[in-house]
Length: 571
Image (tube, rainbow, N blue to C red):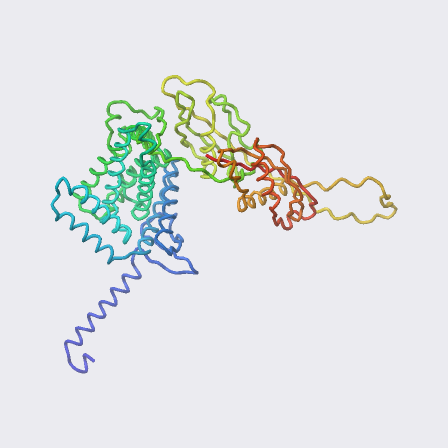
């Protein structure tokens, strides 16, 4: 058309359209982040990412809350892997969470509501800030920031400001509670609000890390907040913060100017110093341990705390016991009542080797409760346990991992129930215990047992003669049936008797369940009582309603008796 009409305008327009189309084609084909729908899943490639996350499947999120819930689980797994020095898992997890963040930011968002809340936030700075209006303006700014974050998860504009305000508010409320701290105040104070503020702050930090996983400052603040609730996650967060600071990704995680970033880091350190003294001491000790792991003389955050500079902290110093948030002296949430649960069926005890007495702990019949997945291979775990002067345990950390996160978690959870064998001098001591796992030997399957063919000359068994012994059941079949019953028990647990719950009665009932090969429960008896008749009755009645479908695995099995422990815990 441009040639026919001899028009320069047509030629110019065609050139612009062509350049725009070429740029669009280039951007969509050569962008470092390309999303390709494939069979209901999303796959992504990141230029320059580690090979472990190339072509990684990214789940679909249909709501912002579902993304933030999954991201929080990934944050926990990343921190634990860092604390257990699993660098390969850490590098792959960081890259994967970065992919999640790019996808998760697209989920939800109300830009109009965000802009309206930002206008309200900016308007508060035009108002006169007198003594009477100072608190009102602070509340208005906090409400505006919260609305901005709820509308759009913008970390740079709303997330970091909201985080600083929430940390300052919690620190002030804790200090006020600790100063008042009498028995009368403890009974009438808003302890529930303190815990609610703490839980909301932790959730906010986990959500922010889900959107900005390569920000060192956010990992540092997360370590400071969760230091009492889970020292392993806090240690891993410190190690991740140091790793990101020493890499280029840690400095480019947020799109702030250098002056704004320096101011944010300064405000974050000030907010951390306002936390309770006991929590800050635990944090300083974990920084010293992180520095030992890294191999530096400075703390893991890149700077030495005052206590570390004065020589008051060392990696081998015992962590003090965490204090509940309701006292104003710590950051430990209050324990929640748990519903009754079925104790996992344990493999043979000889698969776990641990010498507790030589490490200074009482010998236990079952020192480590294995995870439901059981043992697939052998290995060992080296665990460091902080024992206080009164024999209580204030910290459990994995120093050498087995390579299986489920096994590491099982050792860590079991170690908290170990009892010190002798009194501890001074403030306490760290004890290291090695737990070895032996891979189970494969069990030879018993072949099918059809009736033998008739042999000429052999007379049949006479009537009234002793019946042949029942066919033996292979250990593998028994274990399979136990797993099926345990799964049924988790889906249909016994109901906690109201009277027992009100009395805080608990215990473990050992049931003897007669299970037919078809999966039907033929009878249930109490092999070992919990000490409470109501709990025994509830467990037995629930077990009578269980049924499983064992399939061909139990073909030919007439009946087998399974021992199933059921735990009731009201604390």
